[in-house]
Amino acid sequence: MMTTVMTTVMTTTARAGTRGRPASGIARRSAYALFSTPSRVGSSAAAARATEAETSGRVGVYDEPETYALAFGFRDFDAEVAFLRECVRKHGAYGARGMGADENRALTSLLELGAGPAWHSVAAASLGVQAVALDASAAMRAHVLSKLQALGDDAPRNIRVVDGDMREIDLEPMTKPEGGFDCATMLLGTAAHLLTQEDAVRCLSAVRRNLKKGGIFVVELEHPWDLFSGDLSRGESDAWDRVDAERGLKVFVEWGREGDNFDIETQVYERTVTLTLMTHDPKDDDESGAPSVKGEVIKTVEEVVACKIFTAPEFVALAAAAGLTSVAVYGDMDTRMPLDDKDAHNMVMVFRRDD
Image (cartoon, rainbow, N blue to C red; front, side, top):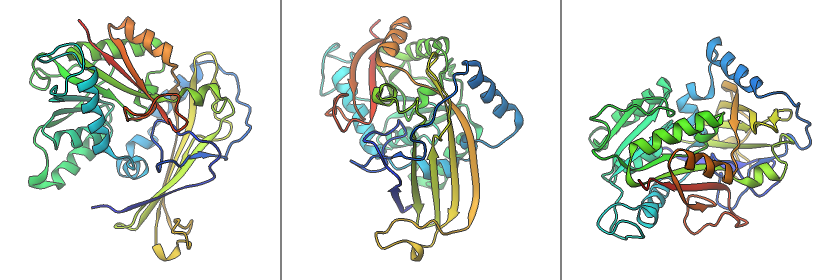
């Protein structure tokens, strides 16, 4: 079992982005970029830079799944699957009782879009849920399959890892359960890769086609505070680190940088993401246990990732255009956390297919 330690550096505000918060009650908004003035370039800039990255052969953050998993794998995925099961009971409309809460309504099938390391699919499959993890990254898919293989006889057998575009979700008949999935998810900021409203409607329409009637869709977005507080327009960033003590590694994460462009018309943020993987010796840590900056740099991966920031009314309208009904909004992957709570970190929206 990998042992990890995480610290937060240079924190200044009380909210965190959709990759999650590094530790309960601890902010990870960094002061690397306090008062930058973003340029007012058009949305074509984000598309152009994304295309350049795809065609240049440069390694991006999603091409380094081991480093990515260390950087972002700090959340409690078992607890988040429990949240999905609770959402099915509270907001689903299939089963014997149909519409309305039903404590006996079970989560039996899950479609995870933009799955990356497929943390939620693996956790759900371990509970007997038929899980399908869809991702367009060959490196990420290979990473998941390698992890499952390493589990040997303990690996869940009811999980499929498939290549796919989340705007289409064209699954083979044997992959999709008869009648559709109980629940589909788009978590950990994946929806931010839908840079246009057209892409969003295509994706949401595909989600609807793959849900059973009464099935739910759970999507995790950046909290509205991140947009309306001006943090994004000022180019403020997040920073944190994590340690894999077993392998003697640590990764420093910079999530955004001073000068990153935010297009106020399209709400697309060109976020600079940097992952620096280093060797780690616990003897170099300070007295508080915080990882030292000492160590040999193994690799640094940097990429400008175009991210669409959605508002709640905007996403509700897009979902309605795709035939999905908004049924709940939370401030975290926790049904007890309202969106307007001071400790709310993300915006988690629940939609349902009603026809």
